[in-house]
Structures are given as structure tokens and as C-alpha cells.
Length: 272
Ligand code: NAP
Image (cartoon, rainbow, N blue to C red; front, side):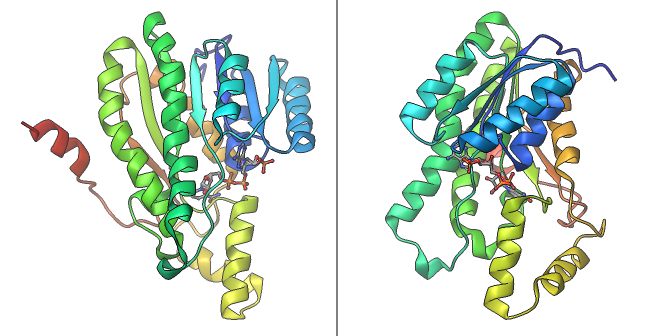
């Protein structure tokens, strides 16, 4: 399928590895020029080189911490009016509710809520002027089914989801399509780290922890980052223009629910 986005420009944040890299790769495969980003320059530059040589698109690599105002300014400058924004950053650490102090919440809210909001505010106005834009926010399945050990993540991502519920509907009339993509368990470094944490806490061998986790997923396996990237590229395509403000779950069937009552949307609609 031709996604109809050849020649567009995308900023893909936190994209040297894992889900961000898979989104960047899938967009490049559709002919999209990229600004890629991570804090670690070596891995980022290697990923950018690989994408350039395989997909023959322009790739600018910006080494920066996306959660800082300086990092965001560098990304916005390098992007010069992006058509597509993929928001991503590292996820907060796991823990118990008793572990977290105010500063831990501020850090999580900054990384996984305020940072994507800042980039949306910086880049979406130009998209609206041109009458075309796409925003995909990488959030988490925890938005629909909160994960107790990831309380910091649950809190920050739910806040972003509320913001996007209203904003997506305010910009849709200007050709800007904004959605959230919710990963279930995908095979990335972050999941290796979380599985290792469980193994350390329970004393179970890592392969037992992984097998037990896979048994909770109806599909029976961890998602591949490539599956995730392909869905992201579709949401950035011409064909996605009628998909507005959705929370799209890629979880192998883990969350057993046929209906999602969009409380935030309903609350906004019924507000006086
Ligand atoms: P990952 O494999 O650990 O990759 C994280 C990527 O983000 C790396 O390229 C990393 O590079 C970059 N990064 C992290 N913090 C950054 C920062 N402050 N500024 C710029 N770049 C940054 O993680 P992932 O599994 O792809 O997860 C991506 C997001 O999805 C996370 O927020 C995670 O919590 C969420 N998520 C993932 C899953 C899953 O199954 N994988 C499930 C639910 C939610 P540097 O370290 O060099 O900066």
C-alpha cells in the first residue's frame, strides 16, 4: 500500500532504539525524511546511517535530551516545520507507591506528558497553516489498564491522554490528525529491563519470567517493534485522515475489553 507521504518531513523523538526506531524506519521506508533523536550519539548515528543507506531518505540526527527545554529547542530548529511528529521518550522506572516523592512525579510528568505537549505546541501551528499534519504519541497500554508497578507512567500518560482527547478534536478541522499509540509488551531493551527487575524481585530465572508473561498475552508472543512501526506509519499516512483522537492498542489481546468508554471525551462534550 502506498501511504502517500513520500517527501514529507518527520521528527521522531527518542528514536535510536526500540519503538521510536521502528517508527522512524517505517516512515523512512515510505519515503519520509527524518529528524531522529536520542541522548547517546553513537547508537543514534549508527541507526541514522543504517536508515539513510537502506531507504535513501534525508536523515538528521540530533543528540539531545528531549525532556529538556534546550533539547526541544534543538529538535524544533532541526525540524524546520515538520509535517509529522512522533512523540516518544524513555519510560519512568518501576516501583512501589511508597517509593515515589514529588520530584519523581515531576520528572515523569515532564518526560511523558509535558514534553510531548511542548512539541505539539511548537510544531502543530505550522501544520495547521499548511492544512496537513500528523501527530502520533507513543504512550502505553497502561492508559487503559494501569500497571501497579508503573504508577509514575500511569499518572503521566493518563495526563497526556486527557490533553490529546481535546486537542486532537480542536486541530482536526485544519487537516491535523493526532492519535495515541499504546504499546503492550514489545521486544525492546525496556522490556528486557522490566523482566529482569521482576526476576530479581521474585528470584525466578529470567526465562521463566518471560514465559509467564507471554502466557498472559493471548497472541502468545511479545510484539515486534516492526509491527509497531508499521502501525505508526499508517497513522501518519494519507489514509488515516478520519482517525482522530484515538487510543490505539497494540497488545496481542492482553487487555480483555470490547468497549472503551471515552470518559474524557464525554466529559468535554457535556461540559457547560
Ligand atoms: P527503549 O528500547 O529503551 O528505547 C528508548 C529510546 O529512547 C532509545 O533510543 C533512547 O536512547 C531514547 N531516549 C530515552 N530517553 C530519552 C530522552 N530523554 N531524550 C531522548 N531520547 C531518549 O524503550 P522502548 O521499549 O522503545 O519504549 C519507548 C516508550 O514506550 C517508553 O516510554 C516506554 O515506557 C513505552 N512503552 C514501551 C513498551 C514496550 O513494550 N517496549 C510498552 C509500553 C510502553 P538514549 O538512551 O540514548 O537517549
